[in-house]
Image (cartoon, helix red, strand yellow):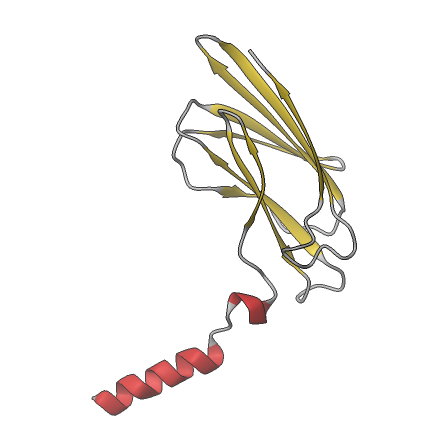
Length: 138
């Protein structure tokens, strides 16, 4: 029985790729938006002919927020609730993308805009993409 367990562990180590070996890295914090949430980024510079990047969003425990993701002509809209797991947008090779946030609460509507531009060398955690953040208070 112990031999089977050791064999299973050895197979898992040999054939289950780590995130570093697979090229898909763990998420890195890109920016945090006051009273809204955190924007993450990650990269995959191994599986495709050119680097691809992904953005993710996780809301703080505040209010329901409408998020719009823009990538060229592609637009995706999602409504996120507080304390939901992070939402990730697909890996894509395009370098420019944007996120818009609208959060309506009793005191007023809070809006934010995040613009991200990836460079050809943005395949390391210590080389984050260029980011521009606008926050429009209530």
